[in-house]
Image (tube, rainbow, N blue to C red; front, side, top):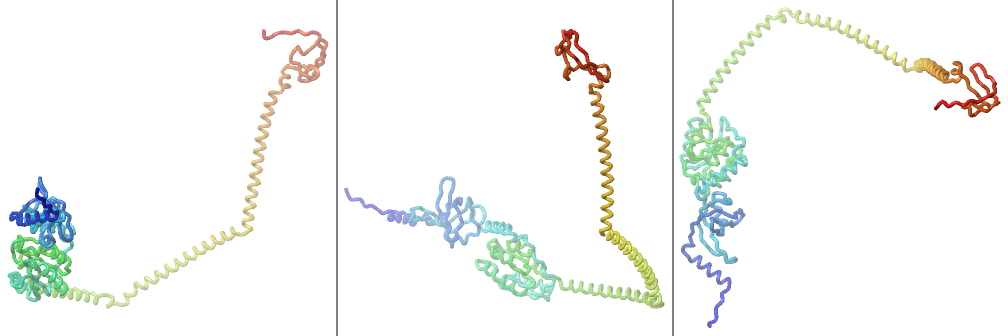
Amino acid sequence: MAEQQYLTVSALTKYIKHKFEADPYLGRVYLTGEISNFRKRPMHQYFSLKDDHAKISAVMFKSAFAKVKFEPTEGMKVLVVGYVSVYEATGAYQITIERMEPDGVGALYQAFEQLKEKLAKEGLFDAPKSKLPRFPKRIAVLTSPSGAVIRDIITTVRRRYPIAQIVLYPTVVQGEQAAPNLVANLKRADQQNFDTIIIGRGGGSIEDLWPFNEESVARQIFATKTPIISSVGHETDTTIADYVADVRAPTPTAAAELAVPVLTEEVLKIEQQQIRLVQAFQAQIQRKTHQLQRLLQSYIFTQPQRLYEAKVLQLDHMQQQLSLNMQTLLREKEKNYQQLEQRLQKQTPIYHLQAEQQRLNYVENRLNQLIQQVYQQKMQTFQHLIASLDLLSPLKIMQRGYSYTTVDKQVVKSVKQLAVNQTLTIHYADGKVLSKVEEIQEENYHE
């Protein structure tokens, strides 16, 4: 049996990788699927593409991902172009994506909607707009020097308001260099004390107008302090710059009309205002002349002494009023003095002594009255008790014919206490009688 040749894992992986790279069907793959496990990274992007039955790992290098005009999200269905290769470190195959766009919606349109929603949430569209100056002296125009935009703006401004100065900032308005060039020129123009800035270009596809949809351009327009008029594309075209700018014009000619007034109309307005001002001054002079005539005919000038007659009467009245006020004040002060004197007298020791003596006399009289009342109450109680005691007195009962018997000073309560020939003392209400027992007869009253 011939000796077998064993391959290393690295050798096998390299062989498989070579097969993938040599396969003409895997060198250029057009693939559709849903984005899975996507998390935006600062450099290269790693995620997966899947459908209902399979999933493949995907990598997109930084240079390729920078060209993507929309924001990939989890679950988004996309169309990708790339090649299939093997990552030797893990032996896993993957697709390296070179181009990606949404499935069913154009990439630029998707990017436009995403950026529009993002900036709207940040408030760039709803922020207070700067008001265009009524009579601008210097206007900066950011557009292509060879296009029709600058010619239309110059023609319109010269026709309407030739005294305004137009300064052209030659600007790239299409291609990859357009957005940085727009940002740089906006910064330059904002530092040159212009009254108004116009940015614009002619019509075109969404790709041609795309520099005006870049986020950097939108944020620079928002940061610019000079009022900005946006005139990009035709009337039906709308860009992010139109939303952020202070004013949107449908055409370059309309932008120029918004930026400057019509000089002849303004001159006519000035002349009309001048006529109105002269008429107003003439009317004012007439009114003042009439007022002067009335004043000259007034008694102040014809009879100056009448000017102070009323003042003399007013002075007399004030003197009388002052006298009355002084008398009233004097009476009040005298009254206050008397009250204070009475209060002071009440504070002297003699006044306190008299008050205490009166209080003592009152207390003494009150005490005597109370003693008399208590004495009378006690006497009434005593008489009542005597009457009650008298009702209970044996003498009171004996006066009605009753008596009691004693033997040796002991009250006899029963015949059993007596003996024949025993001497008894019978007590009556008005005296007593000595008697002797001759016979004892017992009777039972309870039978």
